[in-house]
Length: 65
Image (cartoon, rainbow, N blue to C red; front, top):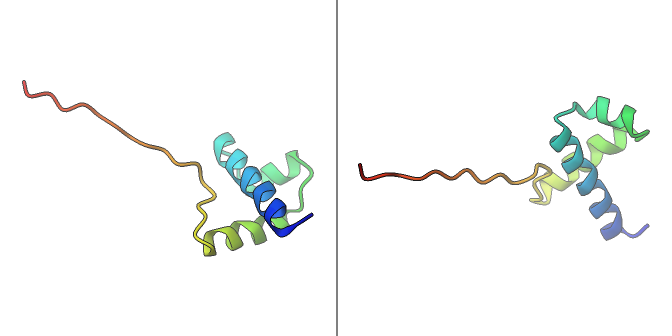
């Protein structure tokens, strides 16, 4: 697996973990993943400026009333 493919795979895993609101250990156990690789990629991606959490945009409407 190329580094870019590996990075994309782990980015997806981290995003899914966040979306399910599971701890890293629980997510890895459910998906038969190595927790040590999970932690490694979480750290590596955050150091590269890639946020492993899905982006959320909050918006609201201001009324002039």
